[in-house]
Amino acid sequence: KQEVTQIPAALSVPEGENLVLNCSFTDSAIYNLQWFRQDPGKGLTSLLLIQSSQREQTSGRLNASLDKSSGRSTLYIAASQPGDSATYLCAVETSGSRLTFGEGTQLTVNP
Amino acid sequence: NAGVMQNPRHLVRRRGQEARLRCSPMKGHSHVYWYRQLPEEGLKFMVYLQKENIIDESGMPKERFSAEFPKEGPSILRIQQVVRGDSAAYFCASSPPDGGREKLFFGSGTQLSVL
Image (cartoon, rainbow over all chains, first blue to last red; front, side, top):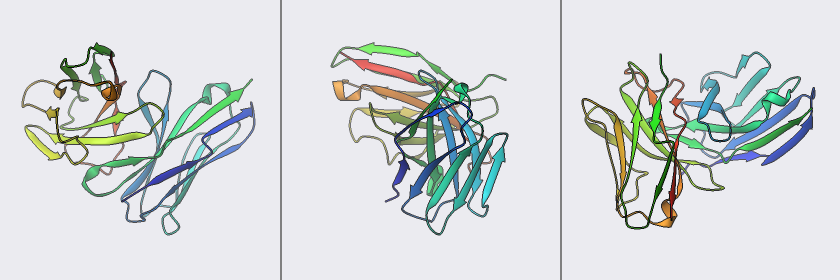
């Protein structure tokens, strides 16, 4: 059974700091890994998707890496801003197009 | 191009009543997924549907829960005889006809509160 763990559960940083969020998964037989952002009272927004054959993806100030063999992914956020405050979710896709989510990292960026 | 639309945003039911949650996928999308987020927990897969077919319902509770995605109209997640433990945020996601391996687009969710 696939399990996804995210560390830390919560993180508070000053504006401008670079930060790393961690995700680990127990079963390396995945199709892809996605990082989502969840704002209170809103849905999920997909930030980055890494296919199992890829090592990393970049979008603006975000960079996600994937080490499938070790079951790990990191989301790097450069020059954090207060608007980055949200819960970040990691999810892996296994068979049948179903996603298994971690419990998220709640990020607060203080001005 | 409207995104995934879910309604209602908030639904309050008393124990024993029925809850019906609706999801309209993005235009051109024919795959719908339902996920549930219990308080202080991560999202959990419930069911995957295509038009008129249930593809994977392995995450659905065995009783009281059902889902459909008719040829016309939105996908419906139906919960009969709700209990307090059903209180959660229910999210719907959709993807294009060529299937997965792409980003899923999520709706804003329906917050179900059972009194």
